[in-house]
Length: 399
Image 1 (cartoon, rainbow, N blue to C red):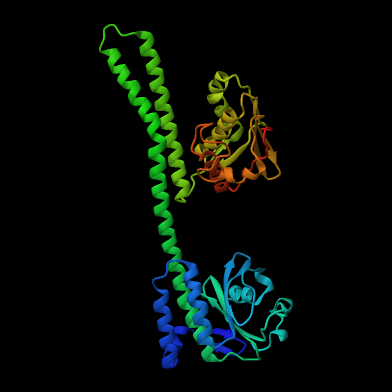
Image 2 (cartoon, rainbow, N blue to C red):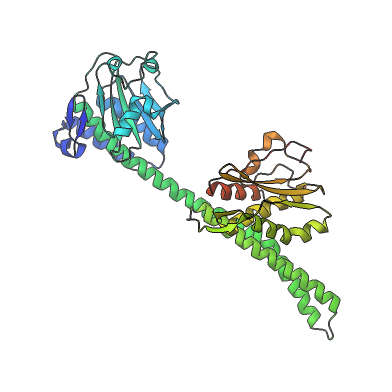
């Protein structure tokens, strides 16, 4: 496999390594050695931008990352400012061309090449450049070298940059794998902590109720009223415990990125079922619950997870609605389905609209309402996993 550039064919690094001068090879080996233990992208970029400038002899270098249809100039090392921190459409710049075509670009006069966005280069010192992709199969980014005077990059310079880009790709993949491992460990630890905390209360309640039942049964005949009351309380605690386990398992699946097992079902029917299940809790607090759904509305979703979303949103409205009526309305909205839950309670300050969807974040004082600040985060994760969006429209005092 060969790369093609304006200066002709350029052999891949693994074929030309033997042709490098001893000093060049030594510097490359030193750079690879420095890259090998790194576990984060910032560290990789710091070493690469310095090495790229030293190896190429350029007046400046950039480290460019691919972000979908855009490119991000993440770092630079140059005699003057270039484009650090800026993003450009991939189709509108030379680094995007290099990534999309997975081959180097060697340009002696940037103002004679139509691939270069000349307006972006006018404020800079750049007259000539060489750009190589970081990884040839599905490039992760690009390394650019720039010269302040007209310069046609030599085969040696392109080869050194290509070798460096290969080492950079390996280092970036290693860093990503390490970060994923760290993230998985953190998710596991958080989940264990969450599970132990959330399960403690219903387990304790269940244990105490069963102890009371044991004492009642030791007497003959038992107090039927007390026996029935404690049985009901124990059953309530066990139901809450089962619901918590289901919810926590759902959270763990989302955090671990497991594939979703969707089924086709009627969303209107599920919503009415959830409302029926929760109606005793609404009635106990004297809160009216209005359900408005269209006719049968079938779609492919994860049944248990959509059940969790609707349940959590309705229970939130019951908790924070301060006795005001609660409504849930489902509409077909263009190519999607819109589910809206509404109350007229304490409301949420606009400055908190995004924060309340973060883990362990709440818009009210913890002492005012029970909870750990996970419900809305969990709901948004589920909705996002289904390709949807969950937002809040509210102001203080307006529900």
